[in-house]
Image (tube, rainbow, N blue to C red):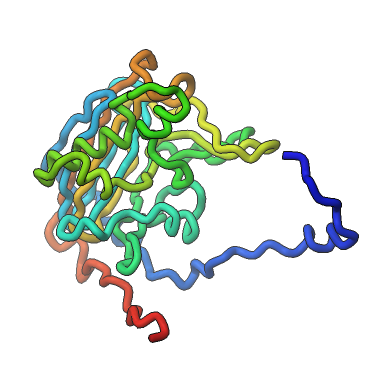
Length: 284
């Protein structure tokens, strides 16, 4: 948009104020990544499930276990939701995760829960796409900046009811897991971790963009469950998100979820993190 106001005389001074990172992340609780890296060497797969193209499925991961999202047949991105398995009001908080880590997450980063819990729900312990880094467009992998695609935006922009957007896929998966109606549980569906998705902001207009994911069969991202988790994964109708979106014509592929148990004793004295210790008095 063209500015509608004159540039003030001290504009340069205002625009050159130093940038400061909002949070001192060196004060975050220790992720114990070295312990988790050792424990993952002895883990055993206990179950797996396949999420069909343009669909969603739920899964449970006990605290102290590992889980992977795996590319199996072709380049495909996924939208991940996480909840406290015992309290759906505590769920993944993409905005706070973005503030504490970055726009895109990788090994050693943690997925944080909503207020008032504000604790790590999962820690990323391995990522086969960590080689990608940042490309020439400023794109990176596994973002926490975009929301899930949804039928409401699709209807607004295209005047079409498309039922297999990620929001709908996640809603159906959560409805099946909880036995509640899909219209009720969609209020618990939340902004996602865009697994395998390659995204960024355009340099000129600063708009959110997507491009073809570099994921290939055999690639995976792995997490350690810090608390008992209920997860839901959608195989995005955008496929690798390099062409179309929210339609039935874009090539799409399944994703696999694998759940692993570490060997007895490999986690030492590890314990699930407690909820935030803030009093919740809010000054009253």
